[in-house]
Length: 443
Image (cartoon, rainbow, N blue to C red; front, side, top):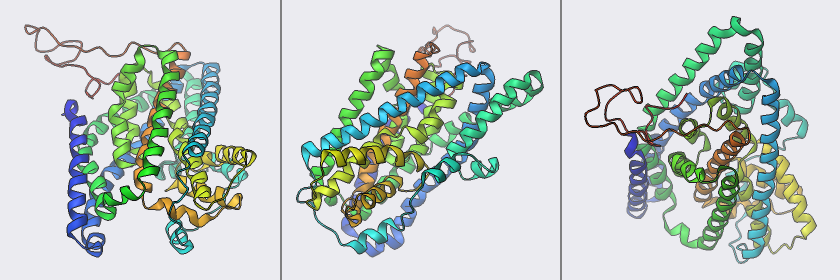
């Protein structure tokens, strides 16, 4: 089943497009909204709820075990500094590339201008997030509340304290470390079960979007879509190219291993949905869990490359649509503003739109311009979410290699036809290890 999961997800995407378009052309919008959309959305919501069920215990257990086994607090600090240096550099590249490409293509010129009411009702109230509020929100006042709300940044902070404390008390905490290790293994096993439902969830998510908007909406925004996705491709090339400088030929193996998390993120437009599978695949690529358990949660809060590029692209796109010419100095100020404001909204629904709206208001640009991109935001969100997964996978792999801790990836194993029924390498005769096989995830 796991070997064919990629094919099933692709099939779910294609069927979702076909069924969604049939529904869009054969049923009235009111019927779709009231009678069809809730059931299609249910298919994807079930999957997303199951994924959210996994995230908190998986992040907690992997970080606690990783830090407890690391033993060297200096190594933890060094990894953290290197990770933040990478994240800041990647953020500048992502936002800067977005500004460069939107100025080069100028897709906003001639875009349809919406009315202010449509934007305000769709975006809702935008609350300005002050720097002091963001810093305070990083530190949990209740660890259980942080886990209940899947606040990854707060879970990260609590887990670091717990891991360091368990490492400090030594043998007294060994039982808790073993329990956390078992919890991580259990969560990854449950991930394997949940992923079997992914193709159905992908079908529901895609069919729901296409049924509501129809493929015809893409024709209206074809220039924006093409130019934005071309910009994302360039960003992928940059990220993977820099990764190749560290990983050399293994960059191709990394791409092969993360193709399923990328597809899950793209089809569901949810970075969170891809997190458990990304943990598993990076395990198999050779990244110790004590590194991925620390890097991925941190990256999900500070290294959203696709989202940051989208925010700079969309902000200038809206200014172009209204015929507002922004100086280079103003655009640099927008870049720095997005650098800071994008770090505080990792768990906010429609987070990119909230940041864009706040940035527009800060620089005196028309907030109602957000309504221009609302119609196709789901299609743009799919691309930027997949890019977030790529950026975090590359960052985690590079830091691991930089630390000299990248292990040999799990080889393909095909036993001899006369091999015994059970083998040490895989447990069952005939088992072939590949990037899609969950059963032999590396500890």
